Image 1 (cartoon, one colour):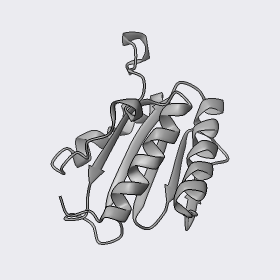
Image 2 (image 1 turned 180 degrees about the vertical axis):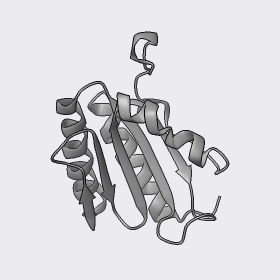
Image 3 (image 1 turned 120 degrees about the vertical axis):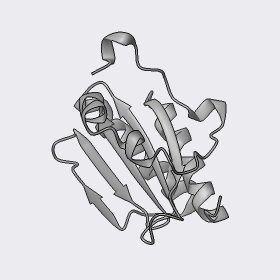
Length: 132
């Protein structure tokens, strides 16, 4: 892996924050060899728009508190279906489970190394009823 220690720290804080708000299937990828614009992606989902927003708020709060990080860009917040938080070092994708199933970002980035997350930061599993 070539992601910096700073990026790995931000990934861990973001994943823990998402998990605290019951995000589903939290996954992180080291994309530093593939992209020049960021080092890591964090992907997670939620079953409804309100929970997507709660996860976004918690990630922003925890990254600011623990790492002094603020997003340089935020997209999709109004709809609550797919919110992108760009911290330069990492990009966090918080998706409604329907969007996650449809767009399949895991398939796009499966060739990149997965960043191991603490067990407490992996999120809940989607149930078979949640599958697209």
